[in-house]
Length: 90
Image 1 (cartoon, rainbow, N blue to C red):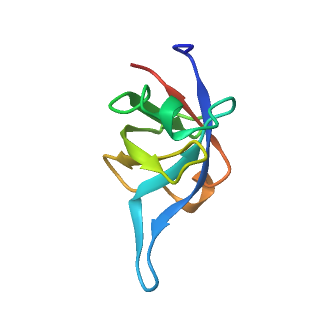
Image 2: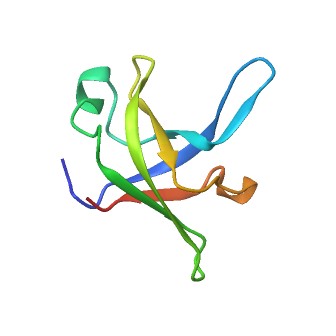
């Protein structure tokens, strides 16, 4: 897999009554199965707002069987991050 892979923040990790802003669901293009996600677990990702604000996170686990991953960030992502890009840096 490419080292400079970009993904889209789909949603926060949520439950029926809770929302975890530090954990997000991320979808990467061309990653379509749980098996392919296994290669991404443990990699560092970065979200940036285009200014000087960056938030670093790590990919934790797959979410379902269709290639979506769960990621935990050091700080909670703002609402503007939903639908924006993250990239793998390490």
